[in-house]
Image 1 (cartoon, each protein chain N blue to C red):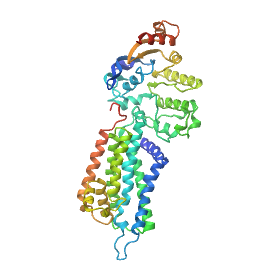
Image 2 (image 1 turned 120 degrees about the horizontal axis):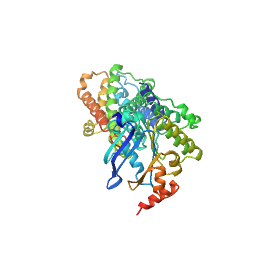
Image 3 (image 1 turned 135 degrees about the vertical axis):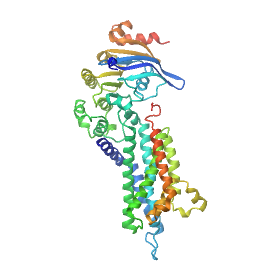
Image 4 (image 1 turned 30 degrees about the vertical axis):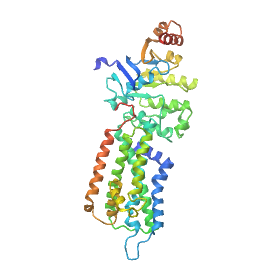
Length: 243
Length: 251
């Protein structure tokens, strides 16, 4: 088991169908410790389905998943002690306040982590008594990232991490993610922003209609797409496989 | 234990912030008591017979159990699933039993508060005197509470979505509220309907509670105690085994 410890995530032949529609078609990928992997693709290409069926938030239609050497469904509680997740649509109890939500989330982990420092870092400490539904979209997004990382997870999944953030908050979020990476965390993120992917990711895979159509380091993807910029390369790759 | 305490405090605060919970869980049972007492007359009869309120005391303190167990508890959990709060909790190490247990405890406290209000108002304004021992009444009350709440947990676990949960809750709640002898005294119904009402678990609970609060012994209520215990055990276990974080989540 120790020999394979560098691979913190292994996904093999993962499929996800909704009725007769197949959203994810037998895809396989691995993530090495310390990497930041970007999952890119147009809307409806299967990014969220891939992420959520990897985690067990949605049932898998086929394939196997190993997270930190464990099955995220059968060993859910052990896995999520060390894994953090930010979903695209974060959800809270009606009426709950920022501080209450942080406290109630932190207490689920062992040992119970400190969270006030991170709240300050994200400029949310003045909001501690504010109901979460009264926060701005950007503040809510920052809170969602903070909650996903509250327990210093070894592996972090972020679904569209900076959607809705202003440029300053985006930069601050990037710095935070990089800091988590240098502290030893591994990150899997989905994004629509190519500048973000170039800035953060060591590697990316591009999904289209539920299949991986390109995969590699950022320079590899740029040259694969026959361009100098990731954004142009991405568009070339997607247009190349679209009917 | 610290974990339980933090989650309990948070959920209790959220409950007390909800106007629905205050109105239906805490205030409605007292209102029903006051209305019925005003209609039927509060005082005991001159010949020393116990009053209407004393004879049907079990019914009044059961209204809160019914409102909370068949509406509050299942709808809170169904809403957490619908709003994807449970989905977020699935990707933390929390045990589902802890979430169900915390919600059960919060709603139990709400029911106890509502029962306390009913007892205080009945005692102060309507001269309530009970023959049964407080311990025996408390034991019977808790048995009825656990039994009805476990039905609520099972609805929360099995309902497909919040709409379905709402329908199931209404189907169980309103007949139990109307035909168990809580809001409308059972004796005003024709005999066949009274007999049919016996199928409602809450009706059995009220028979037990009325008896115990009038000083009868538990031994007279073997069938009621058995049925209520059986429902409590089966429904609680079933709710744990059928619990889902999200309708499409892996278990």
